[in-house]
View 1 (tube, rainbow, N blue to C red):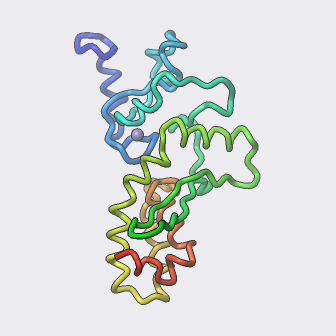
View 2 (cartoon, rainbow, N blue to C red):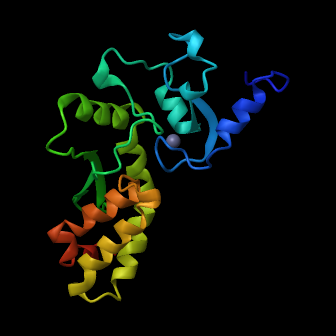
Length: 201
Ligand SMILES: [Zn+2]
């Protein structure tokens, strides 16, 4: 289907071109299509459009031929699974020793009413796409820029400023973006809000 001359090529291009930002991680640029259920295990689904999700290279690569053994191991389908009503992606500050700059750790913070299957799927999504590790690499520059901006922000306004940044990252109404979680996590951290950022250069 990916071959230039294949009749499916136009469909492939149309799905891949539907968005530039990878809907699986929210960060990467779409370069390919991911088979939601892998073509090796489900060959008949390999050309079914709803099984094809635009993806960035990292997401596609991290997932590989992973396939779920049960419902909890099913990653999210960005167009059929809507988890955007609750901010389930959490981030907490990891203070480090010595001269290492602080960093963040990303985790699943489920709604108390969600059952084990839903929560399990979110954890699977984070694990399969390696999002904690990948987001940690990406937030370093955001944290450095934030620490710089906070130098001119009165301390009583820091928490409000960070919460506003978190809302700004909720594009298309989805609070579970890397930046949304990052800024919610910073706003909720007493050490950081009360001047911890100041120790970060
Ligand atoms: Zn991605």
